[in-house]
Length: 213
Image (cartoon, rainbow, N blue to C red; front, side, top):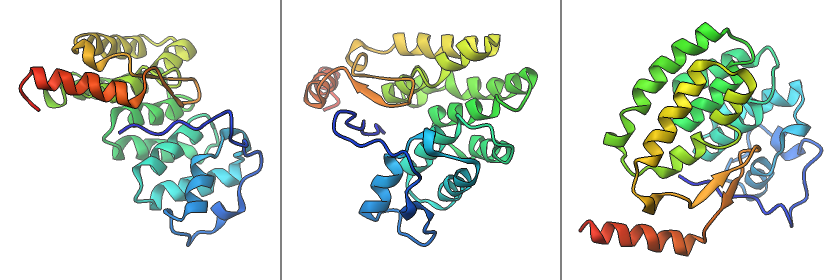
């Protein structure tokens, strides 16, 4: 699943935590609530408001809210988030979301503990070419500047380097039709490298040649 990139030329960056997000009983699909949450930036999150984000993550039925929560909180080192990151790592199925949880955890746990997590992570990662051979979106998120490259630069752990190498190798082994559609910046925002129409055309043509469509 691809998350929509915010238009940085037209949006107003939220500097104060929106009051609407403090209303616990709000429907997460409410237009104002949804937009306020998806436009939230990490610079307005305090220890108190991080607990609100945590509660939203725990109660939401929207996967994009869970990912947004991880993107926002993985940059914070409030003590109460240790359990949040550990639970999120166990809960999430998307590998890029697991990596965001690991990014948060890496602020609190030792390199040896990270190594243990990545050993299991890599086992699942290596199965991706068979289980989801053309899942280029997941690879792009893992290669995003807020994900594995950040962790390699920040911690320089051999285990992070190994995982990134696996991602790069499996990505490079995919057909060219699935490469170069978008990238991810240091804030976790998508940067489109092609129009959605062009990307769709390239991928459709690939599947037609394979006799799949």
